Amino acid sequence: MLTKRELCRAEDAGWSAFVQALELIPQRLCEEIGYTSSWSIKDMVGHIGCWQAEAVQILERIRVGTDRPEPMDIDAMNARFVEANRDQPIHVVRAECAASRTRMLQEFDLLEELTPRAVEWFVECGASHYLEHLPRSVEWAQELADRQA
Image (cartoon, rainbow, N blue to C red; front, side, top):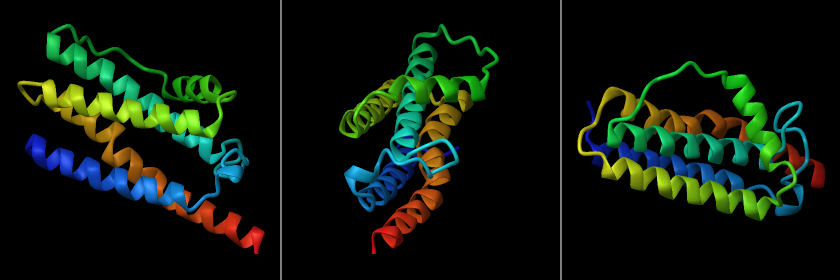
């Protein structure tokens, strides 16, 4: 198993790439649907931030010994996350995503023992999640740039 330091380096590298991709999209176009058939970049950023916030809760429960894995309806949660941010401006959604990331890193750092579940949540809501969305983010940024040309 990787160390905390190695896992945090991977998370940081993924976050940096993710943020760089977001910078390619002008703020005025962040709410344009097209990232997916029903999502904008803002929706995707809110989605990432909400999963980070979920990871915070799980990591905290692991740390204090109250974690009880339960089944999750991922699609329903994704829909709730997007809807929760629908009325927020992009700068708020980005700030909340960054704050959720900070809390996730803090909670991960507080763990005295790295359990497989803790590592899974940290990686899946961090580095892996950023990299999952990175190719489409760059592609969408290029599509938007081509339209503006």
